[in-house]
Length: 213
Image (cartoon, rainbow, N blue to C red; front, side, top):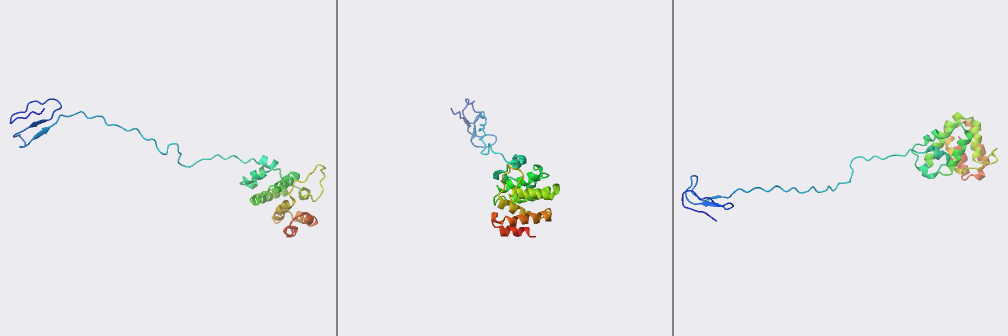
């Protein structure tokens, strides 16, 4: 309850009850109010909320690249693999350009899978192959193998079957003959057979013009 008196000292109050005193006090002529101190309850800590970015990775991503299998491509070129080639000249590491027959046969197989999308890649590859092969092989022998692959002359191998798309392979050679690596005599030889076999070639007039340099 409340214990109040006029003057003098207030009687002790019961625990938990406020205490009032009326009258003059040393400091002021007013009411005095006091309340017992209570123990403060511990501060509640809310559990941490999960981050909305949990499970995400930030920063540059690293991707593993699988090396291109040139040995497989040279053995059996495919349009899908051809689209994945980033450095056409790397074919030289898998193709034995000192073997004229293998060189000509690969160019023939390549001519069957080229598309408008991959024509530039193929031409760069053919130029690199011919430059290397004409340096390593007898010029006449390599030119002869190219003509055999085109089915312009008969192969001595009875089991030989043409593997080239004639129009496309002639198109490759037509762009290569203007390069310094293509021997002038070989250029004239191929041009002569192109004219002779013009009936087999689409757009033969424009292709023949490429050999008259």
